[in-house]
Length: 247
Image (cartoon, rainbow, N blue to C red):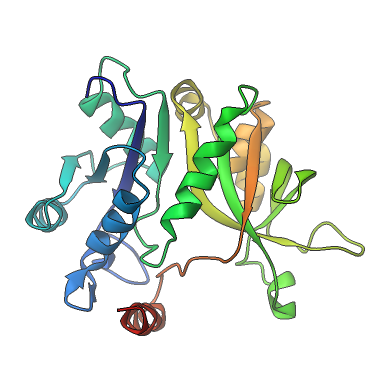
C-alpha cells in the first residue's frame, strides 16, 4: 500500500456470545459488516479493510466490493486482530495511522472517524478516541456505559485521565459516554498490543486503561451522538429501524 498514510481496519469475528454470527446479521438486505465498511469508506481517509477469522465474512465483504484479510481465530481482542492484519497488508510500514472501527457500529457517522484521526495532529497524542455527553440520567450510573474522564483542552476535546464504568467524575458537570473507536499511531498500536494486561484494565475490564497505565496519551474528541452498538437482537431491530428511516 505505498503512499497510504491512514489505514482503517474493522475487526470482525463470528463467535459473538449474545448475537452469534453478528457480522452477517441482515440489515435492510445487506450484512451489518458491509454497512460498517461503507460508513468507514465514506470518511475518505484511506483504505478500509475488514480483518476477520471467518471465510463467510470475507466472502460477504468481497461480494460487496470490499477487501478482507484473514486472521487467526485465537485473538483476545480486536486490537490484536487489526495488528495482525496490519502486518499482513503493510509489512513495509507505510501506514502511519491505523484506525480501529468496531464492526458492530452500522450507524457510525463518517465524520466521527475523521474527528478521532484529527486528534493525532498533535504529535504528543498516541491514541485518539471519541465520546459524547450523556443526556439520559439513567446512563450516568449504568456500568455498561463506559465513561471517559479527562481534562478539557477546548469545547470539543479532552485529554483522558481515566475510563470507568462508574459515574465519574463526581460533582456538577457533564459525564461523557466513551465510544470505542480508536485512531492509533502505528508505533502506539505496536506498543499497546505488546503490553500485558494491566491491573486497572483487569479490574474495570477496559482495555484502553492498559495504554494509560503505560503512560500513553489518549485524547478524546467530543462528538454529537453515540452510534448504536449492535450487541443483541433488540439492537439489531433498532439498527434496521434507524437505517430504514434514513434511506
